[in-house]
Amino acid sequence: EDQVTQSPEALRLQEGESSSLNCSYTVSGLRGLFWYRQDPGKGPEFLFTLYSAGEEKEKERLKATLTKKESFLHITAPKPEDSATYLCAVPRGGNDMRFGAGTRLTVKP
Amino acid sequence: DVKVTQSSRYLVKRTGEKVFLECVQDMDHENMFWYRQDPGLGLRLIYFSYDVKMKEKGDIPEGYSVSREKKERFSLILESASTNQTSMYLCASSTPGQSQPQHFGDGTRLSIL
Figure 1 (cartoon, rainbow over the protein chains, first blue to last red):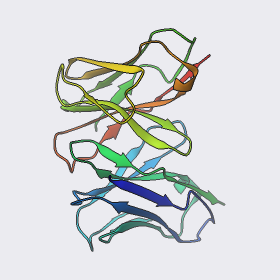
Figure 2: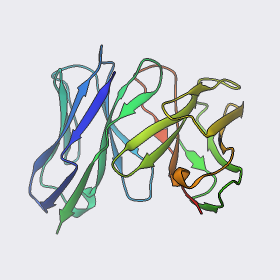
Figure 3: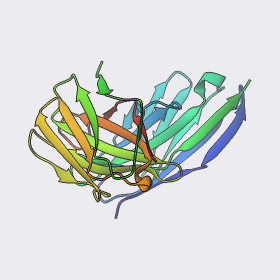
Figure 4: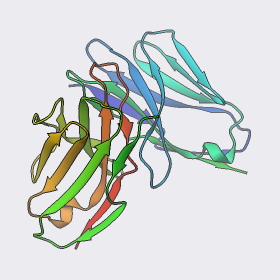
């Protein structure tokens, strides 16, 4: 069965302190890996799709990378407005997805 | 921009009531999904639909049903609400294809008393 595991569950950073979030997956035949951001009381907001090992995508202070077994979301010099829960997901057999449980990021000023 | 609108942000109902959650998307997406989100468990798929009048069970369909009479609207029905159905419910839509991102509404926080 497809599995998506995110670590850590929660991460507290000081403003400007760079770090990485991890998403490891076990799927047969990866058809993309998706990253979302979710603010409290809101639905997930789509950030990136990565399709093949070695691929990288960037958006402001976020950079997502992909290997054959895991993806990293690197956060460079984070600001308090980057505080959110970050979710990763992989497509399943049909058009639906399996989501990880998320990493709750808090950036203190 | 894709807009997925859920009819209520907060809802309080009583045990045994029949509850309707409504979702409308404005991008002519074929696929629509209902999830529930609980702390520590992440998003779990309840039902999804690939087309009008079509529905497929997700991972946790027990106690729920759905209706899709029009392409833009997907309704989740709790036939007889129970306290363990207290949760955040999220609706999403996407275009067909396994590599298409889903676009979410802002959720309905449902409390069953």
